Amino acid sequence: MSTMLLAGIAITALAGSLGNLMDFFADNAALRQISLWRMGGLDSANFERVAVVAGPALLLMAAALHYRKALNVMLLGDSQARYLGIDVSSVRNSLIIAVAIAVCTSVAMGGTIAFIGLIVPHMARLLFGPTHPRLIPAASVLGAFLLICADTIARTVLAPVELPAGVITALLGVPFFLYLLNRGRTHA
View (cartoon, rainbow, N blue to C red):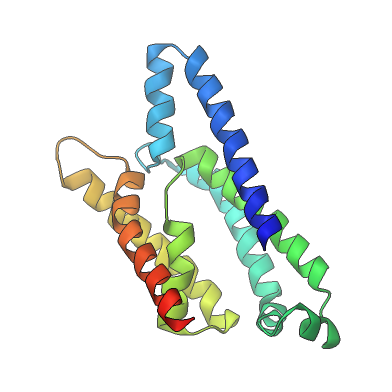
């Protein structure tokens, strides 16, 4: 777990440095676009972009549903899953690749929309339980619903000015994330 955390910190630092490098060399118009992209939003959504994101999203959904039973077994731990015949490395690597493709595509199209991917699985687990055949579709629908709600709030709260949806998801996501951290601390 600590290796994954350190890898995440390193990747975040690298991405931040590359972003700062882009900022440094960008002109004012490009700098504004980069800034808005980093805030994340659906303001540039159109059917062409939806088509681009749909393929990887469907790939991820298919992979997650294909491995749903293996994921349930993996809740018992890696050694128990291996004992029960699950190729843990293969399942994990396949899903990491599918998630990476879907996330890269969606971030390229909509920017970094904070907290949806972090809090929605926890919300879905609280609402629908831990079994993956229910959890995977529920998290997908709940994530889409929350993003649409955030985008609606972003477009209307300061109308005619539109905020990026990522600003709203962060403002709403932080309190829920803190609730999860506190809940985990009190249940530990």
